[in-house]
Image (cartoon, rainbow, N blue to C red; front, side):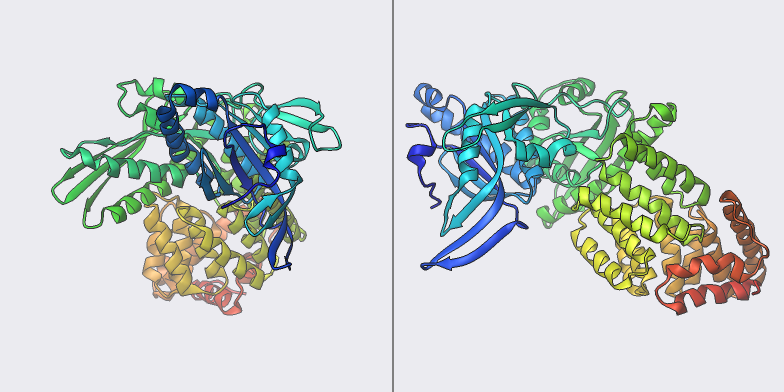
Length: 619
């Protein structure tokens, strides 16, 4: 049983149990010791305290109904939100619960979405929420300290439906989450010596403004509606809901998307409402809809992604499975859908943004457009991408992925031998800025690894990619790039295993992943397979053509090898010309030397150059 010392002084007399959520910062524990047989731990923690408004009055009117509504609220809203924001429910007590988080940003984000969901329910509940940073002591289950007291005072000062935070929280969280901050001024509170400077989120209510569409703002918003159960057995609704819920949870991992909460989107389960009106009510730019039909021992799941404004279908797929293990089917289908959807949404946002002048694009649009150009992996598009991403960073320096893609433009130049001497240090510096803003985004993590590779920090890179791979769940593109990193590190079989898994996860993967797999197959000695991947859209740059020429040479197809070699020479000259670099001859040293720094093992680079020599290149 968790006890709260000094409850008689810290809380209003007769007040009903209050909901406590402690956001522990696991990195900030200052000491763990034993004192008089007691376990003592002192931490700097972000603390969230929430109090249900009007609880006593509601209980007097309808005790049973109030407890049912509150219980449903905790089960359907509070608990899932704690999980979504990487929290852990430590203990549920009375009409509240105790949970832990890793960061203040997550605690505040959870508070804001909690208030939004509370206001949107069929029976709206109002909470006051206070959040602060403070010193916490945990001793044999007892939790106390100045932070608890201050959070309690802020909660009491917060307006119904509002979130009030201390100045320390405001300075840490700031513009890292998209909310409107209002200065709530100085407050003198009990048991705190100095006046407390507080900040209010979203005015008198924590409910944020409806998200704008991608044309006018930042991150695209997607809503997953309940899948329609078309089976004769109404009991199968739990299976349909389970898939939709898993999709919601999976999509919430992607930093380039905002995902409408389950509580909000599931309100439209039985309403025969125009999808455009549903999207407007949810503030969604994209809708995921679908159906589940069970016949005998088989199940068919159909899912589609649609533009919420126009109703245009952007993607759809169908999954047929035997229902030997219903939970395994649910997990596999949700995982496959989640692997595909973010890429389809990003592609649509980029298509929209290209219809307007660049100087009218927002930072988010510039970031996605830069990413799309970077995916071309060629010299001219990379230069354009860098210009867009530098503008994105200047417009909004808080978007972590802008730094990631900007750093990547230098990585590509380094691969192609087009970068300046200071590029390795520069790409690492930019990558670290992205990680500092968001250290849980696996795409940012894998890009940091490539920065290590470019700096020749091979051991650090290998450790980084192993770490990134352990964090990946549904991020197929990031998984594929981890596989490419293992290839550059000389781990050929592991590279093939990882990239194959990524391609299976997203069958609609971009050409860059085929570009990766073509090289993987080459180094695994599968030259026919290498050609099959590199002969189409994956011929993104001269490096791809070099592997084509080398593969033909390994297969003793001399004429094809000679033709591909001429294409390589032409493409290489075009790359150098695009950067104003003069090449005096067409020797191996002049045209292929720039690739050398990519490979950890000299024998790997030699395998490529030997293939180019066999194709007819000299020097």
